Length: 508
Image (cartoon, rainbow, N blue to C red; front, side, top):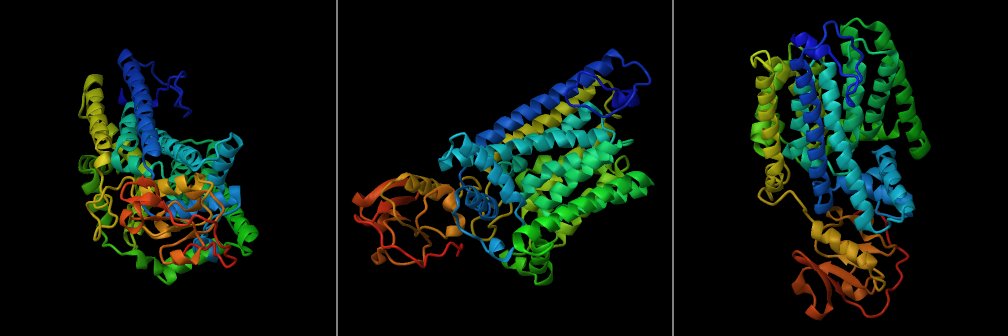
């Protein structure tokens, strides 16, 4: 009967398109359990979307400057013609796929008349948030393709849709988030037993897009080819390989058109990180970093997911090997950040769904199975409800300097002051004395084509800027025009600014 539950498909289901044929008519219990799985999936996706959209509009901070200067800021340059340039876009260590994607969102917002930073940044974060919840749907599809029942797959999806760490990262405009959705849906399509040529081609294309957005996702491509070869599905492996070769050509062509050399961004990136090892300059961590941080940030969910993944090993060996290889290769790298695992989270949720389906063999009857999934969903929801208590120590960032600081809205007050300054007609130049420019929203928040100076830039007597963002005691109270958190925006000059012909747009 478990086989019937796993293989039967309701034609009315909006989530299921896997082509299977029922061999035995489903029983009323089968129908009830299937409907419960669909309703549970609908519920967790809805709640997950609401939680993500809430944080998208209530958090102006950042986890790491990459979420601004590898995406939002270059996208702002594409749409509005100006912005700070990080070293990656000087040396060409990144391709233009991610900024192009974000620029498409910003450009659409501009066409709709949304040109204020608070507006188009919220729209951008909202799009990423919805992509994050779509990853939970993708994990459901991948679990189904790996043999899980709809109810068990929905339980796995709940672990991704509702848990604290996925919620925290989801609205951030990072390559990890942008690439996670095409990666999981691509694997779900291409790895499904009996997948059609269209499914394999579409799945491989999505994986190629995932690599274009984040180079490390090439592990998934190699894994797909390896699994298809291990199954001796040579025709499908050949089709997938042909599609991936085409996407590799498109990757190289994009670099040729933008940087002047085939595969320029991949060459520079790999040389910087693997050959020269310069990424270690931003910190190193031991092999067990990821497990330790996940258990610290969401202990119940991490422990449960780990146990369910182990149960899934016998039933989904190919997917387990792909996920394990991704984890192992990242754990072996000296420089580690929790965000690097974001593309892996949907795979782990899918494996958890398969493991949960194996656990159903001990939970006899639909009520017992639904109760088991209910417990899983509640654990995930409790984790998500506690997401607001996440600190940098819990998400593995700034562990040695600010472990107890909230991971939410970090430097958000500075970004909001930049937005306020950009709306003022009397601002002809601005100096951020409070923090390093890399930890601000840059011109994507300032949105005014006037000089933006760092804290070590020219002095106030230079006349090159009219306003500063600083601490309250560094200016007269009468000069303060806005206040956010521990910082203020103050006017220091009543006249205009001296032009600065030597102003550099490079991020210092």
